Length: 292
Image 1 (cartoon, helix red, strand yellow):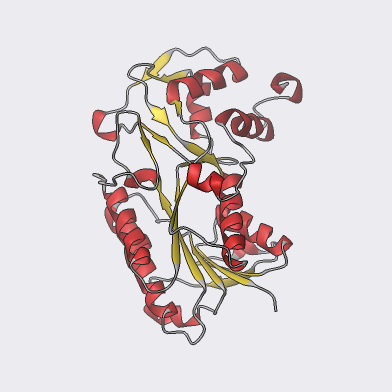
Image 2 (cartoon, helix red, strand yellow):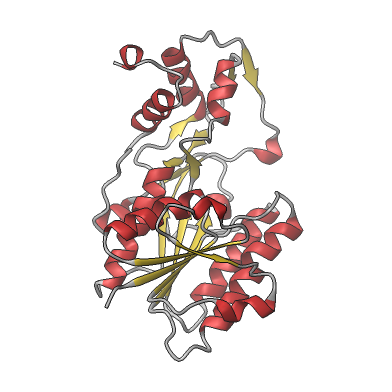
């Protein structure tokens, strides 16, 4: 029988994940409020609002469930609905099934870390988030880790890729992050997000041992000033304005992805250079000659 994966919150990353799983011969069901973006993907659409308790019973059984919902907006109530409340409701439904999923994946964020002095962080590092986003993400993580259903949390760092071009626009405006103190940034390309999840799902479905937590970030944490300066060189832009981030919003840590790489995952874009080179080219910011 075909293996099956249910993707709850099947947006950009979920669609890329679904396509990879379909290529591997799986059945993929994508849950979202509005399913038009799933047309033509091969992913079976299920229009559902998981904040509606009556709708949860319509979730189909699946070997694997991936919870990758996005909050509607950046505020505390929206995050509480999407993450701890939403995930707990889904887990409560799934545990009643005669055939529960073999593993549930929750896509979390490195916002659960509060380190600000360039410390190296990994899956064993302290998580004492101060902002509401990190606090609520951490609550959702713990809800899965404490649940009887087998679960794995995947913490993504800053996601970039097609359509995620805020940093590029800032550089094109001549803006750059301050050089001192160095503000370490961590990122992962959208395609590697889908790749990581595909890799871990495949391990789980093949009966391979899996950790309950993985930190998913590329292989080179880099000061933001260095990233933006490199990008300005590619775009042939003169940087004229320094961005001063408020102290309360500053984060500076270095994410260590050793556990993920030890599991056998190999990054398509191991550093920001390969990743942004492709984004700049595919987005029409560079010609093939300029990127050579």
